[in-house]
Amino acid sequence: VNGVKYTKLECVGQGGTCKVYKVVSPKRKILALKRIRLDGKEHETVAGFIDEIKLLKTLRGRDNIIQLVDAEVCPKEKLIFMVLEFGEIDLAHMLAKREKQRQNHGGVIDDNFLRLYFEQMVEAVNIIHEERIVHSDLKPANFLFVEGALKLIDFGIARAIQTEQAPDHTNIVRDHQVGTVNYMSPEAILNGQASALGGPMKVGRASDIWSLGCILYQMVYGHTPFSKITGMIQKLHAITDPRHTIAFPPLPTENPALIDLMRKCLERDPKNRISVKEILTHRFLRP
Image 1: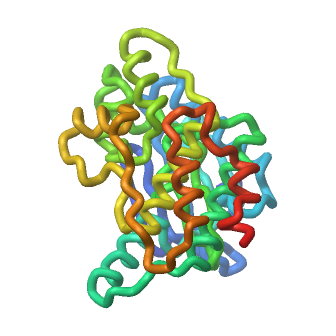
Image 2: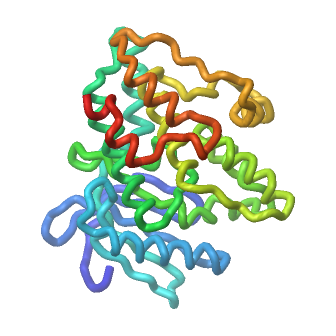
């Protein structure tokens, strides 16, 4: 990449037109190399990747955002290479592991664990919001543990990748394919339906707060607020229907501040939802 030779160790992930390798740099540092094939890509997707690279360059040195080491766009070969920090495990896998342990051995979610990692996620979202970016598709798989810190690994910009198989479907169908509707805000769902009918897709920063609330809820209870509803249509209806109340079972730690924070993130009206700044000063994070 840009004249630097990296040694491939193994392929650690692939999807659509993208492969991720665990590599070693000449300085013997373990890194992730993302190889993206561009042939047959819509112009927008390519622009999305290039925007993502630009943004990663802007956010170099910021905590809680994955660090881009190097990137090269090869128009002739129709390839993009990105060299990034290597993460041990993403939050989705980490939570699945913890949930398994919890089911086998019982045990309580530790407030300190929640505080430490939820705060880092909120800080990451705060950074992208300051860059005027709304992710609108946040889920645990977007956060990666890098040497003990939790980092946001994508900004939802190069999102067209997932739609290449079926470019005509609306957002919601696509989100169903990638299984993230559990974290989608009511307004993103309603907007997705509107944009399917030709309206503009417009969601604000509050949409990301809802998704963070769903992630926190999952960290606390082991599942997302609407995961128990199996039918897709019923689920979309429940998320958007104010009459469908979200259950907050009492916690063994009896921490009212934690339930208060979840409630404020999962406020259906985006205008009344808590803001990033308010979360960072909330009494759960600042006991």
